[in-house]
Length: 426
Length: 116
Ligand SMILES: Cc1cc2nc3c(=O)[nH]c(=O)nc-3n(C[C@H](O)[C@H](O)[C@H](O)COP(=O)(O)OP(=O)(O)OC[C@H]3O[C@@H](n4cnc5c(N)ncnc54)[C@H](O)[C@@H]3O)c2cc1C
Image (tube, rainbow over all chains, first blue to last red; front, side, top):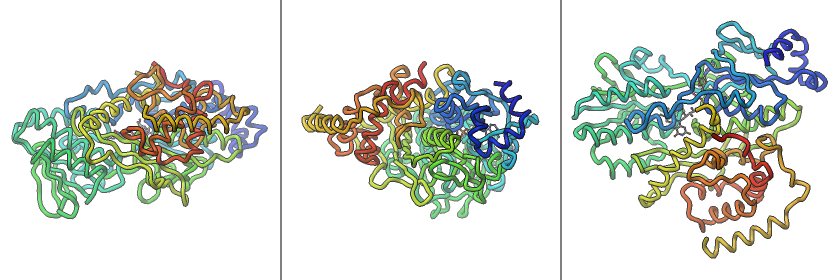
């Protein structure tokens, strides 16, 4: 594989011709696909390109040696799960014939079709896939910067932040007040904050029953709201207070030193605070010129190719995928669709219109799961929901259904991570 | 299986057999997603290969008629479901059949992928 890259580097001219898709050159030098970001989207895409066409040279650029998955990390925070269960390696991806490059991509030259890494390495590509996930906006909420996150953890990228929040909850005295700040749409995992609220409530009810949880929300409605609120009533009566936007829920400023959250209507002093700040696509997206003013990346709904820079595809949380939520399930499906489109485009053919699915489970308590599902297709240039399909679990389902969905939530995590990282990666 | 689900299955079996195209029997190369019909690659998000295991059934290598019948029953509300009723409603008969054929083909959808 390194030999191949050296050859390509030496043949700048051939690379340039290849970028134009001349079939004669394609027959000699294999087309190159570079994927940046080895999360649910990027790792899936790298493997799927290699599978769809083993002659394509696929390089996956990932800055971290191991991946820490966010789904189920709320259970880690609530002390119901070990962090080890969230971690995955890349051996399974490498075993598939994908070349792994450890490092951070810092710049893209869309004209020359090259990605530059932090260490100066330049990677030529015929098609580039950016799947960098999110960056937390430490410039969006006055008082909330990286240092403040050490006092009021976001835990919106699973890892040390999740464990920090868990330790803070464990250290809190019974009777304490936990405050959550939740941003406006769009953000990673729409039901995630409410799953977190539920599982923190479960922890408090079990270990610190005199405590309270206040959710300060920048929205007036949220994903699976009816189901969450009914479950809170049933399982945690009086424990959770949800303050919506209209009732002054939007947090406008925080003071990390005193753990105070300021809203339009007043102030909340917390014993433990988790602040989920506004977000944007990972920084490489803006550096590549594929993010728009919203901070997210507009894409073609058939190929996931950027509408701002030809030859660059954007997947997962970083993309503006219309009605699809920013979820791991969605990222995995998008990555397979994009991989097929990339291979088809490299052959000079036109990819067919895809159909996509999302299913997101949330745990409200151990043995109590709820879900939201959707089916999506390209329409008027966007991914739109197929009408008449999808929706949430029924509001009046029996306990057996909730128990089954909790089981499926666990099973989904095992299945999807095996699909993305392969067995050998564990 | 309920009586109505069984008759649906039989009905679906007949229609799929009648529509079967012998030329398409070879299917896509194992593990390839490029030849997957719309929606097919999302199944593996929950339906793990048998090697991975779990409570959600492996679909790869299952008879296409069985998959089509199940999807029709989910869509019609005659088969109990947690989430498949909501998903099945997003696919037409034709789309469902194409997915079922792909999953049941030799090599079985993305069967080659994953595994412990
Ligand atoms: C608390 C919580 C609960 C969740 N629960 C669920 C759930 O139950 N179900 C569900 O479907 N989803 C869930 N999600 C959402 C899910 O985690 C995300 O949607 C998913 O991780 C998106 O995948 P991605 O590949 O786009 O981004 P990521 O998973 O963030 O992967 C991006 C990768 O790119 C790497 N990277 C970024 N920039 C660079 C660069 N410049 N160079 C090299 N590498 C780079 C990063 O290191 C990272 O490994 C949850 C999220 C949270 C926070």
